[in-house]
Length: 365
Image 1 (spheres, rainbow, N blue to C red):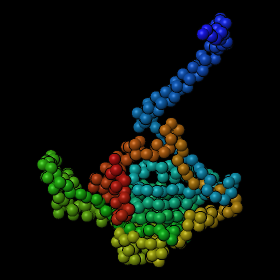
Image 2: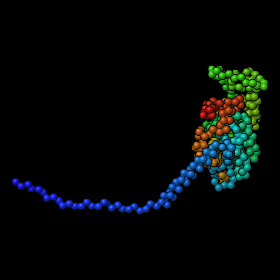
Image 3: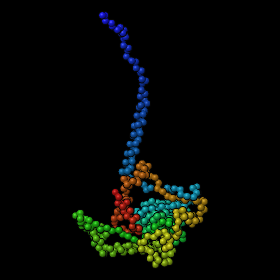
Image 4: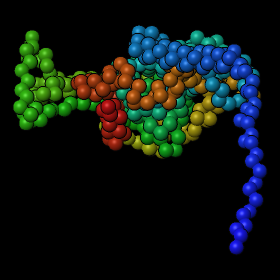
């Protein structure tokens, strides 16, 4: 039996290596330009960051007080004559260099401002700072009509400041929900002697006279010291009443009526109207209309503006939200406020829940 074999396929030589398509040469000039732009951008960002850090470090030395800018509020935007709204908000502290004083100066120096509305939303403050604002607003009133518009709270030192309107009728407006009054004086005092004793801490001050450390937080107040502080409070209250009589004709004619309500009590707007502490119940727009009337202006040809803080360099670098944050806003003013609440200073200030909130705010790290 013969073997049958399948035919062997003919040998085909392997094909040569595949041909590769040559890529075009890379544009080295374009790549270099891109890297240069990237490095320039990174350098710019680093430069801005460095300038910001330097500005932040030396901020107390180089920062100028924020300027006052105008913001349109109502009526004819293109009118020449203006009514300006000055805002007094928050606790009245360190007002000699404060924004309220700069608003007063702006309104006083601007010949186009024919009348001023003082918008008050404050629980009061130190007797010195309240009297400071009262003094300068009284000078402003001698030049231009002044009307007060009370917001949610216009108590104690804020009511004191409102008396700058003088005896001109219908110049103090309170909103229906306003709290006002709180006519009185308070000196805050704490005694941490027992707390220090538990911690094993003993204070031993060296003074030039026995009364040099009166009001100290580290021991109980003596009867003599309490009598001296009470005398200061009584004299400050007498000044408060004198200012109210200069701004409320009713109490100038009847001082006994003022004595009956100068108990530190807080009044609603309706109660304040019945007692003669305010003239009308109305909103900011009503106070503006009264100011226009007192200035003898045509409502259709007047521009009502309110003052705002001008954006500064710090706002542009860091942003307004960051400036207002607690991480950044540790300024000398804040430190003074915190120390003010710890030192024996006299306040025209409404106490109670609102004051507790202020303490919590100032004590927050």
